[in-house]
Length: 206
Image (tube, rainbow, N blue to C red; front, top):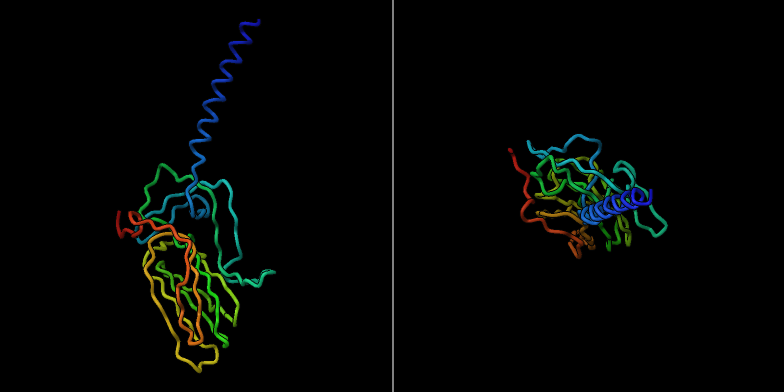
């Protein structure tokens, strides 16, 4: 009986060793990966974006609604960030989809302005109303490729000043911080961004 019990304990120990070794191997997280909605793959042109399995995620408000937190930051858009493991069964043609990118704007203009963001996937933000010393956050809510040209347009709410716009090409994932000056010029001042040079462009065909 003791020999059988010892043999069983040894086998159990071996199983535990392999189990924890696998956990350690898969605990290396993919950073700034957005959770897929359901099991359907994302599309970028005619390309597929790999389905993702989520361990944990944090979800913000929907893009159609903006809310102001206790620290004064107005938040728009829908963003999920979590630790992920990519599906091994699908290839990735687009390095990251649009919801992996967020833009944060802070206004130093004494006048009220509104901001529109155009995304390479074709999505366009609602007008984001911004007052002096206020910050607002935008992240796309629809699936699609985020790599390519993003256009930011700042308009004077009362129409007394000419609208200003800027375009920037993004190849990566993360957060970009902008300021808006008194002439409504948007300027990129800081970033927490992971560049993905080898997978940045969306393929038009497989």
